[in-house]
Length: 164
Picture 1 (tube, one colour):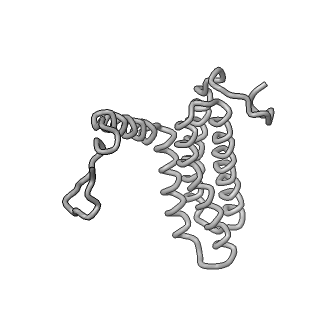
Picture 2 (tube, helix red, strand yellow; picture 1 turned 60 degrees about the horizontal axis):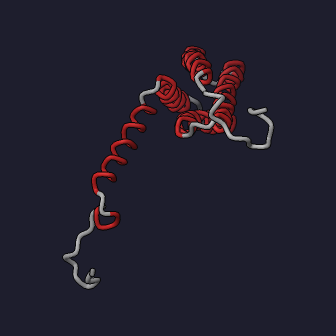
Picture 3 (cartoon, one colour; picture 1 turned 90 degrees about the horizontal axis):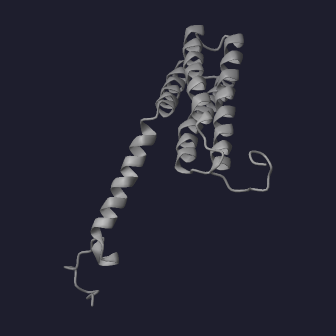
């Protein structure tokens, strides 16, 4: 029995389930999965896009129009990596496709914003071209990634978008 007033009591995982090695194994598996996701070329490219967007917005002037572009760019760039991780974390086709659509929309929005910014002369064209090139690399990786989704691993969602 635990003495609640005794500060010398220390807890570890075995106090709760009696199986410390199972907990250690679970933690090891979680870390391995995290590393697998982080090492995906698509994830790495999403990180590069985010870094480029961060650098790009630092070059924009401090005016209302640029403030809107800064907000839109960062919002779209910040979506990519978490949605890749979410899609990778579930092995259900519909869930993966839902995340893929969100990723695609965010990446396309980034392209649209760079086109508008170029037209308006809000940034140096070479900066925008660099971001557009990284997004194109991302698109190529994205297409291959989505092709790897397994349609047989799905559950009906009754929305009729990705399953029959």
